[in-house]
Image (cartoon, rainbow over the protein chains, first blue to last red):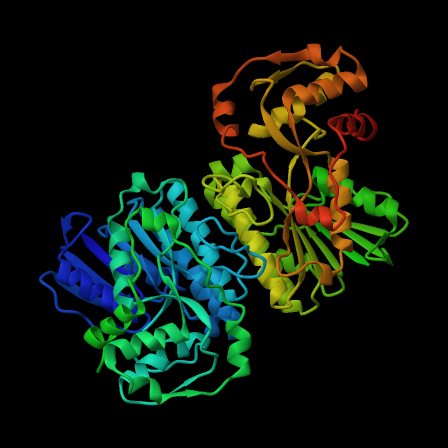
Amino acid sequence: MNILIIGGGGVIGQKLASALAANGTLRGQPITRLTLADINDPASVDASFEVTTTRCDIADPASVAQAVTADIDVIYLLAAIVSSHAEEDFDAGMKINLFGTYNVLERCRSLGTKPVVIFTSSIAIYGGEAVDPLGDHSYPNPQTSYGTQKAIGETLINDYTRKGYIDGRAFRLPTISVRPGKPNRAASGFMSSIFREPLNGQPAICPVASDFEHYYLSPRKCVENLVKGANLAAADLGQNRVMQMPGRTWSIQQMIDAMTAVTGPQAATLIDWTPQSDVQRIVSGWRWDIHADKAERLGLTADDSYEDNIRHYMTDDKP
Amino acid sequence: MNILIIGGGGVIGQKLASALAANGTLRGQPITRLTLADINDPASVDASFEVTTTRCDIADPASVAQAVTADIDVIYLLAAIVSSHAEEDFDAGMKINLFGTYNVLERCRSLGTKPVVIFTSSIAIYGGEAVDPLGDHSYPNPQTSYGTQKAIGETLINDYTRKGYIDGRAFRLPTISVRPGKPNRAASGFMSSIFREPLNGQPAICPVASDFEHYYLSPRKCVENLVKGANLAAADLGQNRVMQMPGRTWSIQQMIDAMTAVTGPQAATLIDWTPQSDVQRIVSGWRWDIHADKAERLGLTADDSYEDNIRHYMTDDKP
């Protein structure tokens, strides 16, 4: 198996690379080579097989042609600009999230090698007039350009697969928490930072009320599911290669209780409850009554409890 | 009102132009100008206002910029290549149906004039694992590239509207019957030709059994709905500018009975029942349990019975 991760420098890309290195196999075959591609040269990982890193700008078809070569069996297409960036800079979102995806798919089509392509979509495709409960068969009515571009990517994955140009699989990722690293500007940032910062001994602001509910998955489980997603047999996937990745719905209070149960009462005292109307306005339109029937049937899983998310952070990511 | 019909040379484009000429107003204002644009210079229509015709290749942004100007208030975006063409020539379908739509929307964005854009989507967006009954909130799982490209067009219409770049409205057209003109290669061709040819005194082949059901609308009602679609107030449209246009489900036998009721028994004797497995294979995946709740609530309507479709053909189109 020769594997390419586009977006290999990101949080999920790096963790996926480490998981592949630890596993040593994918789709029942030994991994012979892994390439990590990203807009900036990504960090490498230690592995028993060859790992290379490269720059790739998916908005540029020539750059895509350099990274996506005929000898690649499996492509993880994780690269994207995030929600707030795509909302502020419409052109950049279209160029990277929509045309970048198209460029990768077109390159696959021109090669004629029908690689497995695993595309990460998002629960951002839900919204607007889509009817609860949400899941595999919900109408995508995204209320962000990021969600729009991901919904279009899903549709392309299905058609390029139907035409036999790729063997595609698209997964709508839940909100990832606890996300490691520094705070970012994303409206969802607090959904990780109110745990990550206190667990690191730092204060953090919670801008919403404790009964705010949302749909989450830990980075570790996300990566497990992305590996399983490549391993699935094409024959089991049916006519719709797009599915919700399993997550679980928790309130902020349930998540804090889980942190306390795992690490004691100290961390929660570092949370500063400061309502922020701008954040509340954005996240109040987000959806959480989400179900992942197809993926669960195919063996993908969510965290058992948010205590697991906390434990995974402590084990995998705490500096 | 200064109106542009892109795809103004097609069956619906020409009938829409005639309807606008007869009405003289749109969105409560007198029509001052109508431009019919198409890949080949379209026929003009007689009207009390100025009517011009022009060539426009929507796959070419420069050509789009010439046709879509800042003085235009309402754009009908009807241009597309049909299902069988887009399936045979993937590049052409993407270029015209997907990027052509994008080019028109991008031109509107660059102008900053926020025109009303009425986009014709199709029931071809339904299929695969989408669950019956189908309608405004169904998951688009198209089983053709044409359907894929229309589904993407819908998604773009919603996001360009949400961002305030256009005031968009997208309608999923039922299969149009009785469609005037010559037979074409479309798999749906028989759904018009088995009425049109006999009503013109010619034989026609029916390749499916008489209990085959599908979802239809007459050209006259389609045009009425496209006019109403422009007239709808933005405030009444909510967060999803995409909706199913009303049609009705009939079996072939019900439609033949309607033809007999309107014109007597002679026409039906000209139908040659010759099963064609290739056509049956294609149309067996098509969906007909379709409902148009939102559009009906907003005042769009279907034909009362297929007898009306036959009468409209006799009045409007019979040579």
